[in-house]
Amino acid sequence: MTVVNDINWQCFVSCVGDLLTTDEVRSMKRIPHHPGTSCYEHSVFVAYIAFRLARRWNLDYVAAARGGLLHDLYLYNPKDRTAHPGNQCFDHPKFALRNAETLCGRLTPKEQNIIISHMWPLARRMPRCREAFVVNLSDKLCATAEVAGYWRRSRVREMAMA
Image 1 (tube, helix red, strand yellow):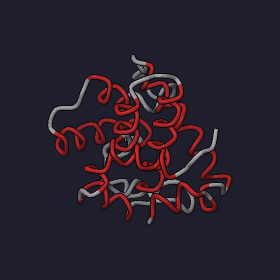
Image 2: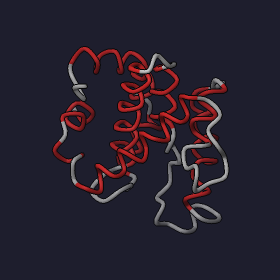
Image 3: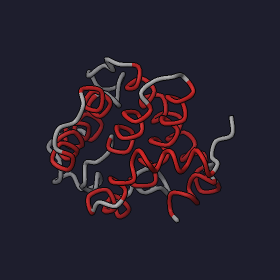
Image 4: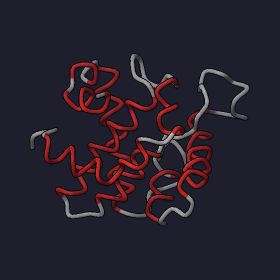
């Protein structure tokens, strides 16, 4: 499976383009995430990989793409301990869900579950739909690729940051 090409990228953008242009999502570019990666870059990477996997497996790829993009919409610097009350690992899915609902209005049950359960099994909220499992898997794969340095050289990054 080719990771990125123009046709797949355009289909992905048709699913999330309205979100990519919002101030909230764009503000994630200023939030650090994994080493050398912003929260925005990570979220676009997760959303795109989840989108591709969901399409390949005949799942709801729109929910996977949108939930993947919004899964880390916590909108604060995680290194600032005054920005959240407890452990970032457990706190940020709740903040992301709240912010996504504020941004989008009503989310589908799949999108809600994708966002709130993306830290499973570390956090207790378990994925309840296949798309949530796909985003959970994509999140782990992308985090590994980011820490390993693949993200900085990837075509997905070039497309996301264009």
